[in-house]
Length: 253
Ligand SMILES: [Zn+2]
Image (cartoon, rainbow, N blue to C red; front, side):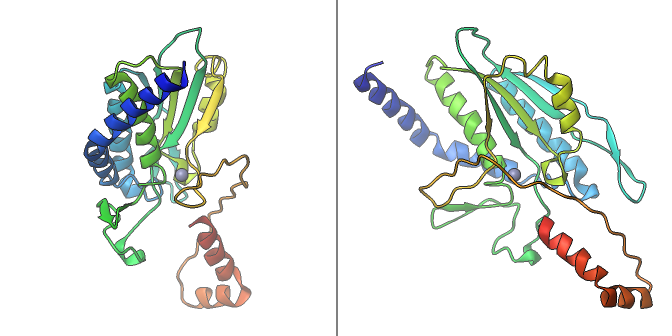
């Protein structure tokens, strides 16, 4: 492709993006409004709803969508909760093109106005050109950005340069329960023809400087049960165990 036709193509894509900016924001607002907090058990239904929304959005794009059931998990208090399904999506199967697999998650960490938010965390709010809302950047926004990019190509009837695969989960903020087993099971099937993986769940160093993450620290999760019997709590504080508990929570937040 010559540089002039390439810049004409870019112009066409950017015009499409500008013309549809309010649609993109409307979609993000709808996604942010779902309290898909995977940490608090009473919000699990919201995570399930979020997975359905994301799956429907991919299907509208023309992707083949498979919601893989991961079963359930047991909480420390004995409560059994269903795990949200993982979305495996596919779009394009041209053997001449490379296959890019995109990973993202649509669950969030707990958020309350009292935690120090200036705005309601589940109401996407624009302030000075910035959009604020739980999950707007981590990670609902990036998931939608990929979907919107593919949609722009399709709407403009442009040939897609690659085949796409999507892996979207709903338990990332709670340790990605069940995902590893699924990845192993699908290694020789869904992932067998994947050439590149894009993990779009990272940081930008500034508004203009994206970061290419090539490694990450390990994650350690602990469950410490503290029974409130007054004197025990006091002794825990004295032994420093309470400090450990608070520290672990601070680390996870
Ligand atoms: Zn994330």
